[in-house]
Image (cartoon, rainbow, N blue to C red; front, side):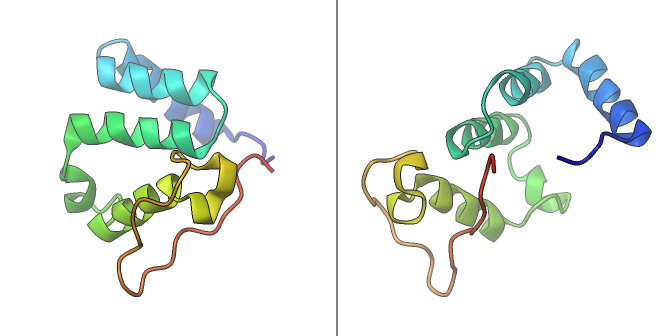
Length: 107
């Protein structure tokens, strides 16, 4: 695990202060802080962000629409994540030419 820098602590403090006045930020931080880091919980955080800012995610350049779709497919994909997936069976196929994210969480 990487050490927390002073800059990180200041940025986090800003998010905590914002959470005092914004229910969506409060919920996203609560999920991030109190739950295990896994695909289900990360997807929940994305849902909160999307419900708050919607398409501003790609307009602001935080992520592309394609990256968000790929993240969602990966989180749902039993064939990619096995038991860690949000679903117990494969429901969709990735967009043509797009591979799912390949990364390990918690390890």
